[in-house]
Image (cartoon, rainbow, N blue to C red; front, side, top):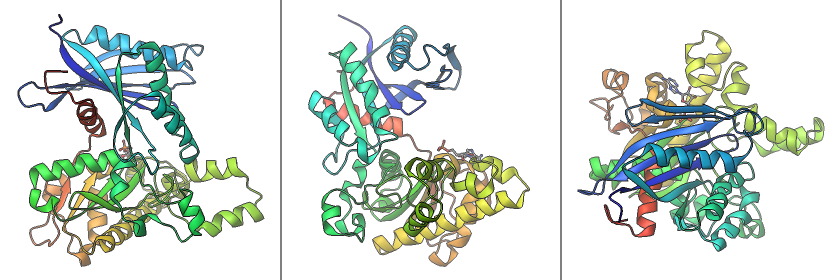
Length: 403
Ligand code: AMP
């Protein structure tokens, strides 16, 4: 019999990084506390492990040579060994994974099984740059630790409540039926923020809320009564507002033009739209909003202006999808940390009744609404990992303290 407490590992695996966090449910109320978090960056080149405690104290670091830096099996094994030796009072009883795509059928988090892995593989064409990396650690863990429970949590799932009119494109029905429609992403972030608002302002959470997830990847979501009604990202993570290096929505005719007149092929277009556009492409300086805001270069200011213009426009579109706006929420790297961007967006939405109080906005208060604003404005730090840990516990039917 073990006296160790059950803990949950959350993995977010990308093309060159593996982010991890560990959570422990408090036996008293089941609320989750973060034990540690970290990541391996530089997978495929020079892999580097860094971990910190919940209070941001550094806990460990390690660097691999180029030979081992591409071996995901070795890197994942290192994370598990390190966590097991670091968390001496805890026992990892399950792993929750962030998965970008659940298609049309996976509208809920699911326990990982051979059948689910096959289904996730079949969705690779919908998210070829992300899905294979999300699925890889599940297979490694299933092979090396067959008794360890795993749960897959989908970024698309929160949007499964959207009505067809919000999901369908103006394309022939046969293509829509074949899955060429809007799926939406950042769902775990929207779900977390919605749960936060429900706990703190249930009156508003019942209403029509636009959540602006503004980070390196950015999207907006119309949430009515806690359910997603519309979102700015769509079939892929390229749609919507301009992002760090992604274009956001452009006229599809641009792509036809580039193919015909500039002889651009698939890989060149993919590179252009995913990696050379957005804030980086417009400014020619950086994909990093903080760098652009600190720059006096007019090209940097042009990129910032385009970003705010497009976010404000998308807020209005989301409000239209719900027939009104009762609250606006900012989250993710830019949304949480840049009072200037929040103020610039709010300024453009004055006509909708949105207004922020300069003092509260500057000190990143939770409620940053101006006193006379009809639409209250909030800043909620997102926590997708926490959401995944909650789902993992729920899917497995674990009770606090009784894993
Ligand atoms: P995320 O993808 O959520 O980690 O967000 C990353 C983005 O947040 C980058 O564009 C950062 O420049 C931006 N960011 C983080 N802190 C700040 C800040 N203090 N001011 C402006 N942008 C910030």
